[in-house]
Structure formats: structure tokens, C-alpha cells
Image (cartoon, rainbow, N blue to C red):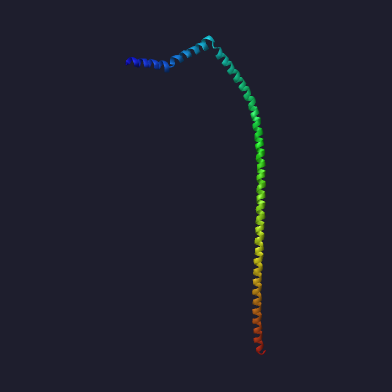
Length: 154
């Protein structure tokens, strides 16, 4: 039984343990890359890195000026658009105020007409009361005059 377990362990390590194969591939790659090529690729990569860095620096300064100009243009456009929006908003506010003023004027005209009607009604009431008072006073004075005429003059 121990022999079967040992055989199964050997089979499992051969089938599932890939470390020896991977280690061999790594050694081959390192030997191929470092020993046979003599660090040619690393020097080539360093040169490429320098060229990319120099190009990047040149492009950054050129692009920075372009971006600054574009941002300046965008800012001017935004300011112009903001100014136009403020003017439109001001016109809308004026139109709204004008409409509100017209509504208020109409309301005031109606109130004024009602006020005049009320004043006319009150005037008519006062005139009626005045006519009644004048009639009562006339009647009273006529009665007093008649009473005075009854007495002989002295």
C-alpha cells in the first residue's frame, strides 16, 4: 500500500508540479537574454527611453503653449456666452416686469373705476340726505314762520 501511495505521489508531482519545467524555461530565457545577446536589448531599451523622454519634453512644451492658447480662447468664448445669457435674462426680466406692470395697471384701473362708482354712490346718498335735511329745515322754518305770524307784532 505504501508503494501505491508513493507511485501516486510521483505521478501527481510529474503531472501537476510545473516548477521544474518553469525553472528550466527561466534559466534558458536569462541565459539567452543576458549571456548570448550581451545586454544589447537593455541598451536599446535605454536609448529608446531617452528618445521618448526627449520627444515627450519637446511635445509637452509645444502642447503646453497650444493648450494655454486654447484655454484662453475657451475662456473668452465662455465669457461672451455668459454675457449673452445675462442679456437674455435681463430682457426676460424686463418683459416679465413689463407684463406685471400692465397687469398691475389694469388692476389699478379697475380699482379706480370701482372707487369712482363708490364715490358717486356716496355723493348721491349725501345729496339725498341734504335734500331731505333741506326739506326738513324748510318745513321747520315755515312752521316757525307761521307760528311767528300768529303773534301780533310788537
